[in-house]
Image 1 (cartoon, helix red, strand yellow):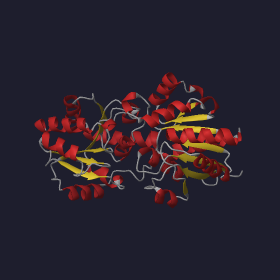
Image 2: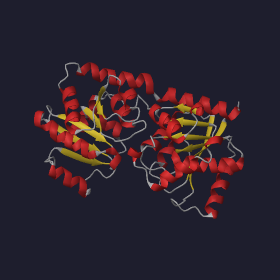
Image 3: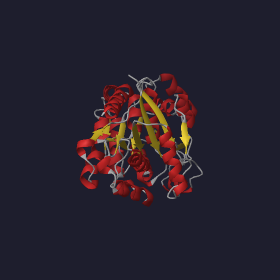
Image 4: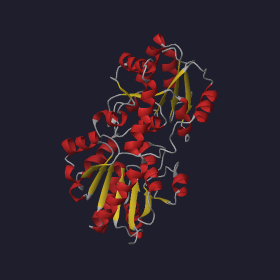
Length: 375
């Protein structure tokens, strides 16, 4: 059987969880079964080299957000038509809308991919909220919706009216041979950070954004230091650096300037997770928080707020905590002092290997694509 031709439309290839999730899925696919064309609406190209490395050449259309003149729309339709797709996959809300718009004109079935929970807590921009609203015009024509989390799928069905019968929860997967416990990586990371042997290192990996709620992380850190003064904190992500004036002011206000390392964005997080003792996630809203699975695969227990599918991801590999500084600090302290910490670390990795290995997730997606294209 010839490979099925799938055209994927995505907003951009910036550094983000949704973009990395697509990269991992395409890297794990079988090219003899699924032939992929990748169209990028915007200009963000940070991950373009990684896609090229797995044999997927992105085509950038360079459309400006919120301004799609007739010439640009025509260019989009022509670009999709040239790929001769059997199925068009939208990736994230703008990609979903663009895929549906083109699919309706080319008479090609369309799939959507939902990567977060589109509730008020997520704080989507006005343009994104408008995009989600306009998608309702096409929801009756969507062949299938892949939603990254159970909670998000339920929200979309109840509040947006998207068809539950055509929705499938397809969680993010990861390469568990890439994200793994590694004593050498642990020594290297902690040496680079200047961490003493008896210090506990707690990290957060999240771009600077109100929805990620870094303020809660820092307030919990300040609380934790009262009872556990040998803690250090590492912040990794876009704009988490000394040039961030608001973040610097918070550190000074809370007396944390000498206890927090700001590493900014990193492409090598798999080498950094083993250096952590615990990972924190303080978000107000999520779909499938990739960082939880990545850290746990490295044997790092987590403490996180009850967002997205965090409960399903964490299992016995950490704790769910209230979004309040004292409660969050208490959950971290409970793990630090737990007599069962070795078991929790082992459970963390075992849970991810058993439920979220990328090979199984990619196989599910490929099989669904083949069935939809055949139909």
